[in-house]
Image (cartoon, rainbow, N blue to C red; front, side):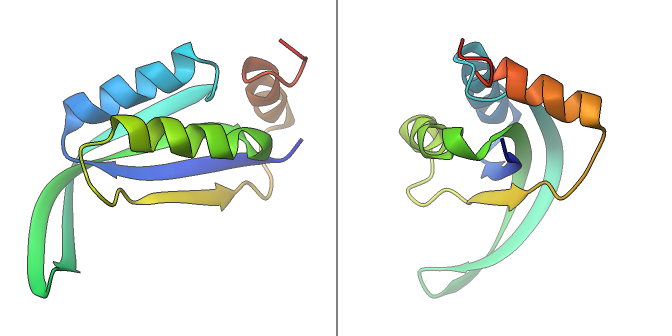
Length: 108
């Protein structure tokens, strides 16, 4: 099974923690990392914006991506949340196996 990382920016640490815990609890992600203190610059509705955000990175498998994206969108405060799915090219085989097992790779 293909392992992926889902990168998401959140309004703050609390939102990222809440969404991340729900993803892990539902076994949609094996692990979620939360990185507060990110500074973002972007155009929104014709204006150059700057925002303090928190990044959340979830480790899961490609088969779970539709459910992961739907769960994040349902819980996220942004009307257009940044949700990017990144392929895992290589890594520690034991960790990758653990991710697969945690999110249902063994027919949980």
